[in-house]
Length: 182
Image (spheres, rainbow, N blue to C red):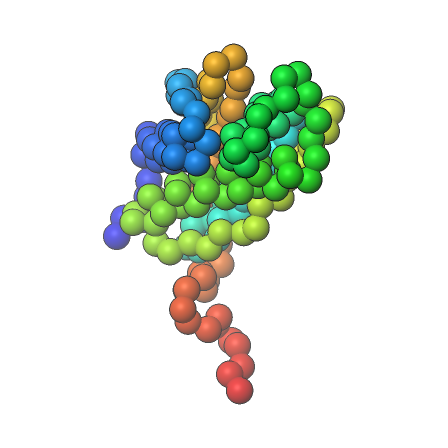
């Protein structure tokens, strides 16, 4: 198993996972834009962002970011309800739907890259909604970003992966090192 993966492979996995989730779960078509690399710079954001942690021999974060209006549209399609035009009202159902969509997208990317990077665990998504907020990951790692268009709406899917500094990575199905079995 190779201990490396290149950005093109990650971008390809993001495109496939996002297209699959949107087609299968939402009945929506997305068009992928050109992938690019983003340095870990804090920037002001608006809308809804969902963050999912990845852990194993490689660690990192995946994120899905969109406007409040598009989050509402995705939730309506996922729940089989009519999107309310111009509503943009983000409630618990919308946040839960965005969490589930990001969990499926990042989970599918994780499954694709595990063949090269080894087993990884996936955290429960954390969803943030608001105006004028900043998100930042500790470290100076680079993110692979793939923008998607769904009509006029924009969705960005980002992945940041780096080798773990831990000497004992997560091993699914095995007790953690130094644990006591009773």
